[in-house]
Image (cartoon, rainbow, N blue to C red; front, side, top):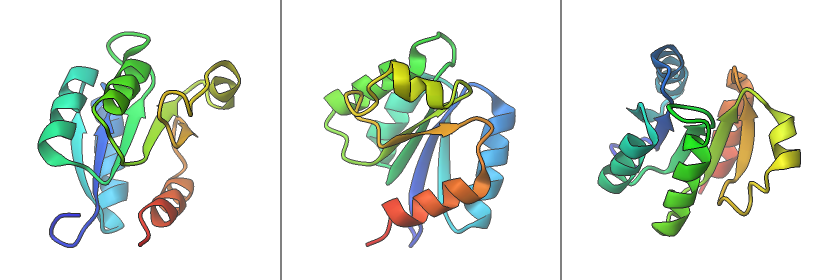
Length: 125
């Protein structure tokens, strides 16, 4: 937490999604840092120590999101990590997201109320 606000790292290669997520998060009292790739996301994680991380599943490469999740786990990340996926619930059937170090999966486009409810629960305390 910085400046009394929880810091969310959002990694997505689509600037429109980054911009809309920033509006949602900042209007709800969170700070957001963004990264446009898995590599930039790992760098931001190391520099900023976010309270929660949201990663798009498919970015510059099909497996970029899962690769970043594995890197975060290997780096000893303790912040909740959520994957954002346009494939939605089918991902939980085909991927063991707990094994990747994920706390869960959000459907893209994300439902703001579902996101904010999850953030309140995960960042309480």
